[in-house]
Image (tube, rainbow, N blue to C red; front, side):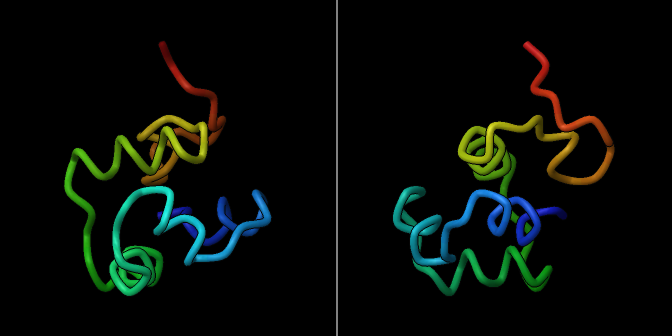
Length: 68
């Protein structure tokens, strides 16, 4: 997953992302490190937060352009 890359490009901390998504920072950190897999709902929230498609977020779409 491209979470760290996207977060760093946006210039925000793990705490800022977690606070925006109303989750604990440790949970977000586990997503970013690949220790824990986000639910479908959380994948959608993460994609919306980073303004990318879910496919791009999980590495299936290299363009990063949101579809629809």
